[in-house]
Length: 530
Image (cartoon, rainbow, N blue to C red; front, side, top):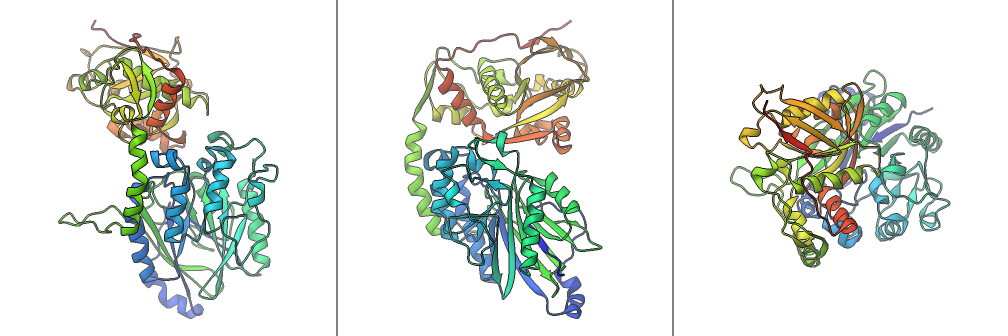
């Protein structure tokens, strides 16, 4: 019985990678090799400002291989004003124009409920794949779900898997969506996200019966789970992944001594185009590969775009931007007091704007997972807001970096270390100074660095150094930004939930819900010299 080569596209490679030319001789001995090119994206999150460059890169790669597959591993939705304004319709138009072959659904595709997702899928000129998604009881999405494995899939429909024929070879494409969508997003309660490993195995068997020896798994599970699948589910060729926003410069390799499995993933926000060239033996076994990420925003030595923006995409983007400029002037709330975002103040002491932002972060995080405290680096707060009406433009000026909200699980000891780093350069007004919510702390700047934190309380109770706490932070800090290596270590150990909600959205929603606001200083941060 022929083995099934699963192409899982995830973008994580940690073991050695074979360059195609190095194994060419061996491939020719086994029979005429089959060369497949996969172009892939993931977690674009409606960052349409990058799409004109992405389209040019895709077109250039298609000139090299007109049979290249173009795939997306999910989370097209949420993250910018483009999504807020167009609810995925603009994203679908760009994806149709460049000609994607298939995509899987990410958790954020369910952020606005079934009707918005249905309208998006209905617009697509290509199929959607997700094998563990059960929408049979959802009257809105159920009509889009198709059973069986088609060789000519309908556009705008959802299949567990599909078959595409490339150069006379049948390619199986399986989709998978994170089971955590049930609590990471807002799907209808009738929608079920089934066990990912079980459903992948089921689709593999079905494809095997049809004689398919090459299969692509589009995975929106995240790198950690992709790695587990690569090791537990034998017969996977390539995993094309998403969800963890991982920048895999080269593929990760598993099962080298038996049937190789590759994992790839292409960064985030359309900033990169993943490219994987894979060579297969006649029996469908990977014999050579070369994977890379193309920086679509790169410039050459004299400052010219390496991938000049596509003219059609530029024109369409300009049209889409006009209503958004009006959106920025939209009133979203009011404040009874001026909100202090003065550069020196947010980097040296508690401010009422710092309190407001972290309160919003903490409230939102608790909608997803129990969270006790929130951190926001002062360097990420870039302006003040006067008393009175607050517009979306005001919020964007205060939080301009596009940072997203994440939850880290930290021990009390790690929280102490993070706070020590926060006040380590308070005299230099460094951006690492943390504004906080759900906690209070006292520090003495006259003491040696690393020994300045004197007293910490979490939700009014003394901090327990051995206890684990849920901490809402922005993705920049979780990645080690501003020198927070202790937070990066927690992220890399898997103690993270990435909500992919932009901070400006979080704060805007909070203001709309709670206005008028009147945040004050509450002695959350106290400087005391002893």
